[in-house]
Each structure stands twice: as C-alpha cells, then as structure tokens.
Length: 294
Image (cartoon, rainbow, N blue to C red):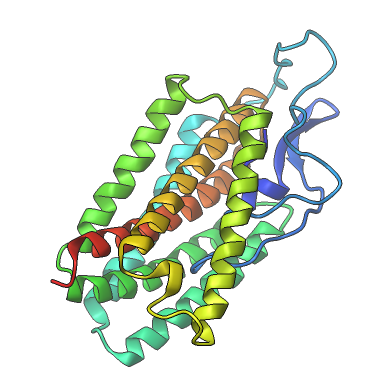
C-alpha cells in the first residue's frame, strides 16, 4: 500500500530479486500546499498504485515472504529514532526563530524565504533515489524557522494558540495511531482510492480559492477565512491529514515486514514530519478561529 505523502507516493518499499529496496517509478508531482510539498500528490496516470500490494510476491497468498538474511533492515526503532531527530530539528529551529526574531515585516520576509527553501529541499529529497539525512535535517531546520515565526505571529494575537495547536496535533496523531493499531481502520485499496479522490478535490478547490483571494474576487480569505466557514474547512483538512497518517503507518508497517533497508527509515521520518507539520498548521488556524478576536 503506497502512501499519498510526497515521499511515499513515488517510492513504495518493495523487494527486488530477493533484497529489500525502493520502487522509484516516476509519478506526477503535486502543487504546493502551505509551506511544504503537496501531501496529496497524485500518483502517475495510467496505473492504480492501490490496486495491488506492492510487496506481494509469488507464493502463498497473504503470507509475507521471508526477509533477506541481513541485519541492515529497517525496524520500528529506526523509524522512531529518525523521526525524533527530524522533528527535534524542526522544534529547535522554531524555538530559535521565536526567541531571536521579533514579530515584524522583516521577520515575515525571512519566514517566507525559509518556507521556500524548505519547499525546494523537500522536492529535491522527494525526487532523489536515496535518502539524504543531511538534506532532510536541513529541510527540517528551515521548516522550523518558518513555523517559529508563523507561530509567534499567531501567539501575538491569540495568546497560547501555538501550545494548544501542539497539543491538538499530538492528540490527532496519537488517536489516529491508536485507531489504526486497534484495527478500527483498515487501509484497503478502496479506502485509499476514495480518500485520494477527496484529497485531490480539496487541493484543487483550495488552489482556486487562493487565486480568487489573490485577485480580490473573494474577501477575507474566502474558504480560508477566520470565520465559521474557515473552521469547517480547517477541520476537514485535519481529517485529511489523519487519513494520510494512516497510509503512512501502513507504508512503514509493510516496509518493516518486508525488509526495507535501514536507511529508508529517514524517508519514513521525512514523510511523517511533513504530514505532522501540515496538521499543526491547520490546527493552529483552527485554534485561532475558535479563540475569536481576543
């Protein structure tokens, strides 16, 4: 099962000639969402990546093949450790930006520049054959700078909003993981296809809304306003983020089961970080909306 995360959408953990590896078949990319790569990138036309299990091999149906006899295979500990390092870099960058950069127009400009650099680095890593820890951590640092200024801007108007958004992000990701592990959600081909279709439609609508706002056709942000409509859209975006977390969890679970190389844990960490940043940004906006104009 491939994830729609920009990292996992073009790279599915696979096995080739008895050894674990990554499937690097080219697929179409997506437009930018917020400050990072599009988490709803559509796989290449003409194939349905969810129609079959990319890890399946000939043999007993439903039984996983034997992993190669090697100790250099990805484990859950590897994924947790790399994810902690990547998210930790984001947090450090955000804290430093918050502490050193006052809320001002120049800080906003620096934040936009950091966001653009982070986006470029994310796209470079997404199209690389192999994981680059240095590239991933550099992306995380610039993403953190943007989030620090962005969060400070919200905090200056809605005191405590970033802290509440962090708690909300932890709650959403934790609840999603628990529901997934409990088996309440089954990541099937139908589940993935329906979710992908909804997500692509959402991104297209948001892109049109952005154009309408830019040309002055829609006032106050249009669908992304700070009112009730914006709250509904924000809740929907968070639900989509949780949906993509389930695909990422399935991707990682299958990669471990079928012996993906240990180095691929960096790609898992990279993809999870991008998804969690997306949820945090949406959660921050939602907290601000519910806080009103205090």
